[in-house]
Length: 396
Image 1 (tube, helix red, strand yellow):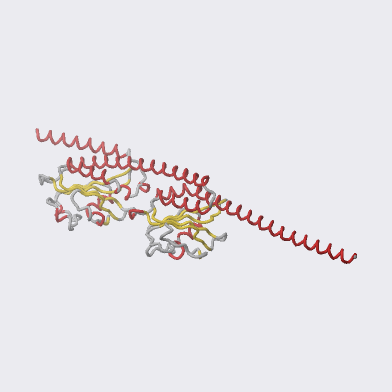
Image 2 (image 1 turned 90 degrees about the horizontal axis):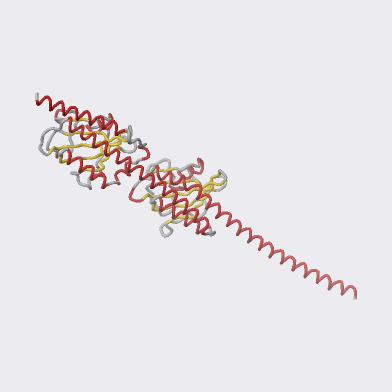
């Protein structure tokens, strides 16, 4: 009877944990598309502490966190308390394989009491290092979407895991989801602040200089810094959108502008000039959407590219392109937001530079015209004097 009462108490606690799990999941309504995997992986300290907490509470030796790739086809190892850090970036698993893949696909936690009796438990170089054939896996859910899985192996006392311990893991996973949602909101606020800072700096560029070359250089430098890009280019298009000319490239000591105008091609810049929308390509090699002859300045070894249009009165005048995001990361949705936010200000800066150029050109033309008129007046005065001399000779 005491044993039965104890079991009833445990079952009641498990149900309470499941209720807590269900209720807390409603607090993490975040769009996963706005929260790339690489942004979570970058929060190394947070992930490490979460893994350590799970291992301590469940008295387990081995805990791992895998996150879904952007296309949802693979699980990528993000953090582990027992796998060498140097090996973690290379560990990935199709969601069609293994217990972890099943949990990620179905979004349901799983208790495996004996892996040798489960056909889904795949044997690999890591599973051979487990001391026990019992483990638990739970999905990491943000809002209503699975973003990864947490696997817990090898209890310190070598006993099998229980349903109660799986319920505890689910609760901890929900706490992690809430923390990730908080991180996301903080990051989003940081991005919004960065966008405002960008806009302010570009406005400052507008009022601090009238020299077109200085405006181009400052504008490109600020966008590269904000998007953490290693290189950039400011490119203008002809009125028909058939040719482009690289006006400015950065860093100038490494990159070279193509001489004269080049065909717009069929790549990223052609698409942006045609559609007038920000375009990002994170794969260059073998990508049919990229035209290496027109999309990149000379001397650049591109890994990825993000391009925003420069418009005036609804017409695309050219593009601003940045290349090779630092730390080997891809350009993401937040980079797109920043480019979309700064595009109008960049267009204003370019338009001001053009107006200044046209003004200087007009002044030079007026000066040259006045000079020519003065020369013509001088010749006319000489001819008048010559006529006067001829009249005098005829009269005498």
